[in-house]
Length: 580
Image (tube, rainbow, N blue to C red; front, side, top):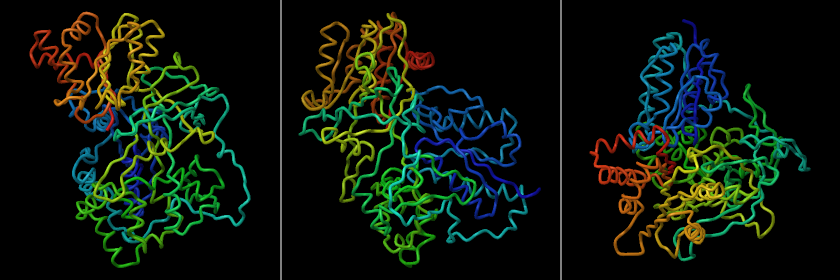
C-alpha cells in the first residue's frame, strides 16, 4: 500500500484532547507523513469515507456530555444522555459512544480504543503512551514503506505553524478583527458582545477566607436572550505582572507589532488582529498561566543548549520521567511562566515563531447565570468564587478567570468584558403546577436564583431550595432575597451552615430531615429535583440521601431506590450541573 495521509479529528473542551491530537500530529510529522489536525466541528464527516487513516481524540465534559466543538456539526448522529448516578457510566462516555457509532458505520478498527484518565497519578499519558506505541506498530504493519523512512530526530524542532514578521513602525492601525461585532448577530464565541460591567461586589465577609463576587453586566443592544439554567462564557486575560515578566524573560518588547503568516494552509487565528502587538498577544491569547503539559517540555527541550537544562527537560519529556514531571509541575500547579523562569538559558534561546506551539490559546470559561431577564431586564449577573490556594510553592495559586474578574473595577472607569451565552444542561418545567426542589450549596445556588426569579415572575410558586454554606454571617449569599421570597409564599427554604455549630451540617442532612415533604412532592406531584455545585462529595452524598428518602418514605429496597433515581434522570425529573 502507498504511504497514507493521516487525519486527526478532536473534540476538546479544556485543551487536553487538542494537545493529544497535536502530539500525534508531531509524531506523524517526524515520520514524514502528510497529516491534518482539525476540531470535529470544522470537518465535514461526509468526507470520512474517502479517508484512509483517521484518529479520533475526544474528551468528555460535565456529566458525559460531548465537548462544544463536537456539537455544532455532529453529523455522525450520536445520541447523548447524562449519567450522574453511576460515575463509571460517565467515564470516557463520549469516546465509547463515538467508537461504537463508527463501527456501526463500517469503519475498520486499527487498535482498541484508548480510555485515558486525567485523574490517574501520571495523568492521561499513562494510557496514551502505550496506546501511541501500539498505534505506530499497527501503522507500520499496514504501510511497510513508512517503517523504512528515517524519522526526524526528537531533538530537532519541527517547522513552526506560523512565522512572525515584526514591523519597524509603531503607528496605530486598525483592523476589522480588532473590533468586536456590534451588528445584529447573536453573540457567539467568534463574535462576543462587549458587555459593560455595572458592579463587582464582594458578597462574603472580609474576614471570610473565600472572596466571592456578585457581578452584573449590561447587555443592552446585544440580542442576548437566556433562560434559567443557561451559562455565560468569557475569555480571561493574563495579569499585567505576568505579561511584563514573560516579555522580560523572552526579551520581547510588548509595544512591538507584528503580522503572522502561516507556513502551510493553516488559517491565522481569527481572534488576533493583524497587525498585533506582542503585549496584546501575551495578555489576551497565550495561556502562560496554565500548568504546562508534557508537550511543552518536549518542545522546550529541542531549543536547549545548556547541558543541565537540556538533560532535565529531556527527563521531563520521557515516559520514565513522568512521575518526576508531576512532582515538579502538576502537583504544585507550577505555571508555564514559572517553568520558563526556572530554565533561563533555554528561555533565552526561544524564537517567537514557536510561541503558538509552546502555549495553547486561553480557553473560554463558563459561569452559571445567576439572574433572570424577567427580574433584571438588559442585565446579566454571575456569582464567582475567586480561586486561590496554597501548594508547596511560595506564591499562592490563583484561578486565571476569577482573579481577572475580581481585578476589574467599574468604579475606576468603564470596563467591558466580551461575552456570549450558551444553553446550559439544566432545564426547568414549563408546567405551572410542577414543583421544583433545588439543592445548591455555595456558588451552586447561582442557577437556582435565576430559576426562582424566572419562575416567580411566571407565577410558579411551588419552589423548594436547600442552601448550604459555612456560616450564616459570612457566606450566606442572597439571604435577604430568599427571606423576601419565603415571606411572599413563593419559596420553602432549608439552610445548612456547616461551621455554625460543633457538628458539621450539610445539605444532604437537611434532605434526610425533610424526607416526608420530598417524598410527597416527588411521588405525588412529580416534582423535579436539581443539584448544582462542587463535584467532589456533595452530589453523591445528596443522591445517597435522596435514595434513603425513597426507602424510608416509599418503603422500597436500596436497589429499587437506585432504579427510581435512574428513571428520574432518564426522564429529566432529576438533573445536575456540577463542576470541579
